[in-house]
Amino acid sequence: MQDFIPKPLIPFLRKDLNPNYISEERGILKYLNPDFLQGDNDKYMKFYNRLAPFYDFGERWIGWLKYGNSVAEMRRKMMQLLEWKDNASVLYVSIGTGKDFKYMPQNINIKTLSLVGIDISEAMLRRAQKVWKDKLNLSLVNCPAEDLPFDDNSFDIVFHVGGINFFSDKQRAIDEMLRVAKPNTLLMIADETQDFIRDQYQKNVFSKEAYKDAHFDLTEIQNSIPNSVTDRQTHFLWDNRFYAITFRKTAD
Image 1 (cartoon, helix red, strand yellow):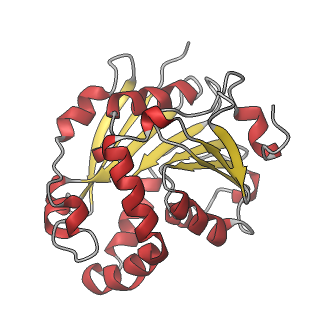
Image 2 (tube, rainbow, N blue to C red; image 1 turned 60 degrees about the vertical axis):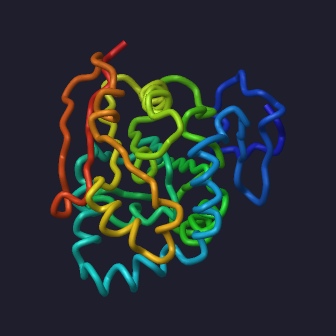
Image 3 (spheres, rainbow, N blue to C red; image 1 turned 180 degrees about the horizontal axis):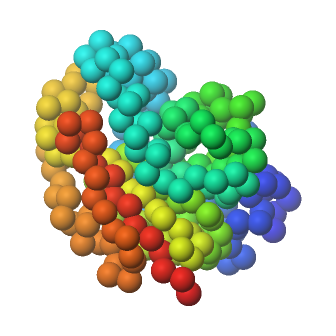
């Protein structure tokens, strides 16, 4: 294992990582296989790299003016769908700026959590690093969701918020999240509904160009979850602007 890898990440990493794709820069591990940096992944990686400096401002002020406290309440309800516990290892896929950490259940001692966040956008990870580096035990990895650099059965909690609607390979991303989750883990994937994409992203001056032709089918994502899981539920939040699918990895 390379000397530059942050120590908190070493217990989680696969032993077969391609050394040509792995590097480290200013505290963020990079594992970037070019096979997964094409198509929509490349398009939205570049978009969020440009948007990152303004992302939190947009939600905090512009979003609040339009939606009030309803966004925060949605995030709080969404995070309560997971089975949080002290001393857990947690993987947040598509962490963005990490805003959802603000809404973890109050009865959890966040200092006991080993948190790992991944995102295809390095600029979004830099924002997360700046906000959370002194508040959480958080390690960050720049990689696509379709090629997670972690061992099988590594994490007690695995969840994804925002992005899967337009991943290049939704099926593979879900398979990867299941692979790295421990048996009996309840996973969650969540994102905006098509109605919100139409009413917000395709009209907003900052995002309408990136999303002008964007459309997704929720059933495609639902059908990408293998039949082997249990406890599958689709939850609609925030007046049907957001969905969250929870499902449990079966025991080996």
